Image (tube, rainbow over all chains, first blue to last red; front, side, top):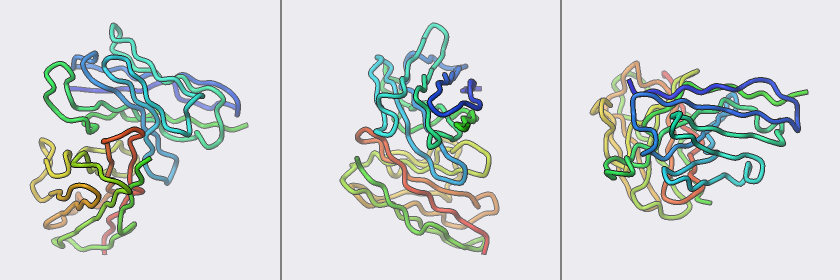
Length: 124
Length: 107
């Protein structure tokens, strides 16, 4: 089964750092764009960051300059380095796959596979 | 940034009802519009992409339409499993953005 599994969430003080990981299985990870989406408790979905198969990166205005997205294709892994964390960053963080295979171009850029999410709490 | 606005925010409906949710974009997204269903405590699930293409495995009672700035998600006959929150998302230009969500409740 195609799967994404996040890890690395937890409790961190304001101003602190945390690194999230997302491990992919059962698909050729290197061929797909990947994204992070977050959801504060009781709130809607917020796109956070994306990375192309070629390594190009994109950020929302609320995290630009504080968060860094990266990928390690040899380990089928996606990362989100989060620095200067604020209370407003408290949320469940999901990794998601954009469904277009960038080699064959088959598929679409909508998010067809999601992880189960990892909780990040920023509090003193 | 492209702002996505869904209406209504909450919808009360009965089993068998036809349900329509609207999503409006602040500027054209072409057909690069997706719909997701989310149940409490779960990750979102892709229903529709390219505004009107049904994702594999999604029941045919779900349909999407529209292009440019106005889109709709229709459930032709609401089933017990459909009570959830629905989100639209544009993926035509970064930052990708979601609508605020529409919660479909039991009437």
